[in-house]
Structure formats: C-alpha cells, structure tokens
Amino acid sequence: MPTDKSIDNNIDTMTTSSLNNLPFVGVNDKIKVLLLNPNSTEIMTINCLKMAKEHLAPDVTVYGFTASKPAPTTIECHLDGVLSAAAAFRDAYDYIGQVDAVLVACFSDHPLTNCIREEFDIPVCGIFEASIYTARLLGGKFGILTTVQRSSIRHGHAVKAMGLDGFCAGLLSTNLKVAELHTKPREEVLALLADRATKLVEQGADTLILGCAGMSDMQQAVTEAVQDKGVQVIDGVVSGLNLLTGVVRSGLKTSSFGLFCRKTMVATKPRVLYVPWDNPVHDEEAWKTLNDNFDLIIYDFDTVEEYMDELRKPGHGRIGYIDAICRSTWLKSNPYIHHYILRDEAVRLLPDSCKLICQSGHGFDIVDVEYLTSRNVVFCNSPDSCTRATADVGVFLILNAFRYLTLAEHCVRTPGKYYDSQEIANIADDPNGKTLGIVGLGDIGILVAKTCQSLGMRVVYHNRKNKNIEGMEYCATVDELFAQADCIFIACPYTPQTHHLVNEESFKKMKPKVRIVNIARGPIVKESAVIDAIERNQLVGAGFDVHEFEPKIDERLLNNWKITLTPHIGVCTRDSFQNFEKKCVKNMMQFFYQQEKPHTAVNPEVYDKLYSK
Image (cartoon, rainbow, N blue to C red; front, side):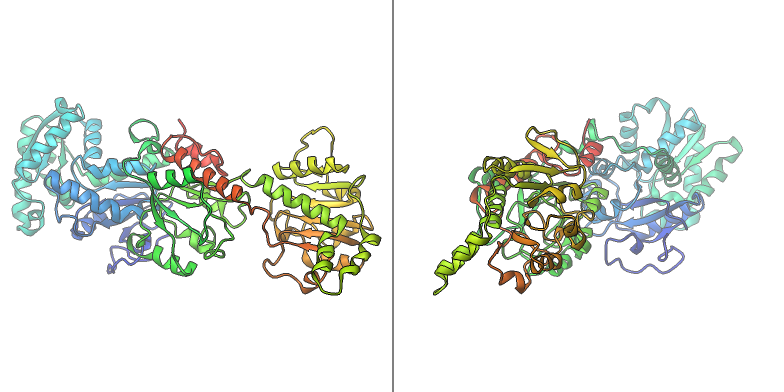
C-alpha cells in the first residue's frame, strides 16, 4: 500500500529505485501500473496522473516516472524518440521490475514500448495504441488532433502501419509544439483544439483522439466542442490504464515466443559479474569461451557491505545492469571466502536485469534459491563435478575411522611417540564384514558404496526414494539405518529437515560401538553430541571433512588423534575445479546463446515459464 508521495503532496528528489520515491495516485496497490513519461518534463507526468486519478479502479495504483536528461523535454521527431527511449529505459529499468504493467505516456509508435516488451513479460502499452484500439471499439472512423504538422505525418504513417488507415477520417495539426500546449494562453490552445475537432467531425470522424499526452487535461473542452454530435473524445492515458488493468486481471503476459522472445536476444555480449579467486585453476577451453562471449565485470569488493553499497547507487554503479553472475571458482577460496552475496540483503539488491546465476559446487545452502525463483532468476549449481574427488575423501575417512591411520601418522611425526602406535592394535577393526549405513545415496554415496563393497562391507542406505540398487539394502527410516550400521556415512543435502540429523537422541538408536563420517555439511551432525558420544566410548572412530561451526572446531576434537579432521577439502583436485568451470560456462552458453535450458538448473520451472515454447 503506498504511504507517501501522493500527487497531492510535495514531490521530493528520487534517491533509490523504489516505487515509494515516485509520485502516485491510488490508495490500493493490488495492481501497480507504471506511467512512464519518456521525456524529461515532469509537469506532463503530473498532469497525466491527475487525469488518471479521476478514472482509477479502487485496487489500482499508478506510479509516475519522468525520464531524466539527456532525455529531451518533448518528443516531436524520430531522434527525440530514440534519445528518450535510451534514457528512459536505463533509468526506469528497476521500477519496471516492481510493477504489473507499464503505460508509455507518449503519443507515437515510441520505440520504448517494444524495448520493454523484449525485456519484461508484463503487459506494456503506449497511449497511441490504446487510443486507436479504443476508437475502433467505439466508432467507425476516428480523427486525431495533433501538435505540429510533422506529428500528423508521423502518426498517419503509424496508423497505416497498423493497417487502420481505412478507418481514419483524418489528422489535423494545431501547429503547436508540445511545450506550447501549456505555455501559450490556455483559452487560445483550447480554441484551436475545438476548431480542429469540429473540422475532423465534418470530415466524418465519429470518435476523436487527443494526439499528445500533454492534452490529457483538455479532454473536457474538446468534448464540449462536439458534444451536440455525440462524438466520443478519447484520452490515451485513461484508455491505456483501463486496457492494461483488464489484461492484468486476466492473468495475461507479453508473449515470450516470436517477436518478443526474450531468450534469443544477444545483440551484445551479456554483462556478467564474475567472482574470481587469488590462485585460480582454469580449464583452458572453458575460460577462453567465457572471456570471448561475455563482458566480465570483476568482483573486487573488500566486504559484502561495500558490494551492496555499489548496488544501491544509480544504475548499480560500476556493476551496472548485469545479465548474470558467474562464480565458477572454489567457494572456499581467498579473498572472497565469506562473501555470501546470494542470500540475505545482498541477493535482494540484485539488478532486475539479472536472469541467470551459475555457481560451483553441488550444495547450495548459502543461496536463497526460493527468493531467486520469486525474482525469475535461473540458478545453476555444478553437480557431479567433484563426485569422484569427494567420494575418494569419503572412503579415506571411512578407512581412517576403522584403522586410525591419523593416530598412526601422529605417532610417527611426534618425537618419542613412535611406539605409542601399538594402541591401534587394540582398537582398530577391519571394514570387511561391517555394515556401512549411507544417509543420502546420490552420486557420491553410490561411488562410496561400491568402493566399500569391494572392501567387503555390507551397504544399507536411507534416501528420499528407494533406488532399488542390487546389493544395497534400503532403510525406510534413518532410525532403521542407525540401528544396523557399524559406520554411518553422511552424504545428504543440508536442509532444515536434516539440521542436527545426528544428535543426542540419534546416538541412543545406534549400536554401542559406532563410527561416523561426514562429507556433506557440518550442521547435519551436532558437534556437542559427537563429543558426548566419544566421552561415553560409544563413538569409537570418526572422520569429518565438514564441521558444524566451520572453521572453528572444538579443542576436544582437535586433540583427539583417533578422529580424522580435514578442512572441507573433499572437492580439492585440479580436475574438480576445471569441471566446475566447464559446467558453469556450459550453462551460460546454453542460456544466452543456444536457447536451451541450462542443464543443471536447480529451479528449471523459471526457465520453463519464461523461455520454453
């Protein structure tokens, strides 16, 4: 619901791309319409809003936007149209993303109308189109009142291009420039309009169209001049608003197929915010493809707050209207290891121009995918890029949990402790014949399972679905798995449902002597419950590549050499990082150049809704 800047109040200078900074009319913003004036004369915007106010439905709010210079003060030729379209499109972009429809308040076949249709799926209409369509509904022949003679010629061509010249009784010019509609004495202007209106009726017009947004507040005077004939006088602002709100209520959008097919528009290189790292590993071909086909804007902010400040600047500062974000690099790499730019307030500052985000890694718990989906941004992760590498580390940790090789190495490397390794003879077990319980049988889990089967281990697993894999037994509940497993292997995604999946209560359901390995996400396993189980001698071996409070780890774990700890490096091979880059670049090429759905889209429904035929 709008709360300030009604046109009845003073209008302050706009500071951010929020609708609340624009003048408006209406009291309920269930349907939000942007009245976009592509010239830089604000009084015209205000007059259009005042006209709209008298005809608004109770659930509609209209926000008025006036283009800033270098947009021309009036639009009276093709050059004015091009200059104003460029300025208005740039300045209004973020506002357009916040409304349900856009009315371009310029009486011409203004290029801005189709520019917006190409970029957004909301309904868009110009007051020229709206007036013509309304006139065709109400009468047989329409006449158009214009400003200068050149406008009459231009509008005549536009009518012919629409195939409606046979329904046009004529176009008559007042020989007034747009600005003169309000600078010349009002009586003189109204008299000219009344004279031209009368002549158009004599030429056969049964409907009259006001051929300039600046004439909106003159409709009554023109109506009075021809009211004895029953001729209808049409204002494009009111007609356009009524047309657009009807389309919005019908749930209709601008077509994404054919003329306005947004997925095929790559006139220039897509602008991409690229997040680097200080010691990169590149795939030579993928890196070249990325640089050859995209305009890379390098992320180089010291803090996330500095990045957000840049996004808040007009036009989003040096970041600009990016089309995508690519973070194909290792998420744990310096210098941006803790720069979580895809969640919390940072992700909400994304420019509306951003359509795609590609990120390395399989998990995406540091990404607000739900919000990106609501913004119609396709998000892609990079699954199966580090499957082998992570599975290998998982098997290593399982072996360590049974054989205590970390303790053995500690004894070798610590002076005077070489023979302390004899303790291992009394605590180690062979994996052979033991039961491995895998929580989350995805690609990594399957590789680990097959490798451990070759070691003689029996494999049971719990998954959202029974995969019916021969030689592996499905457990319908995780508690059933806990009861059977000698070693529990955590490989499931981290979600609110799996937070602290392993906790104090979980250990009560496990065997008296059990081992645990976690290569998924730290908070799935509650650290304090692990320490308690170790101190009770129930947890006799463990391996953790991920940690609940990463990178902080409890000293009782750090000082226990029977527990193998690694710093979340399951991914760490050159092959993995090259695979990340290849997968991210493939997704970007598919989206921007091949008109295909990115092959690892996490929210494919966004692509299907906006871009699929």
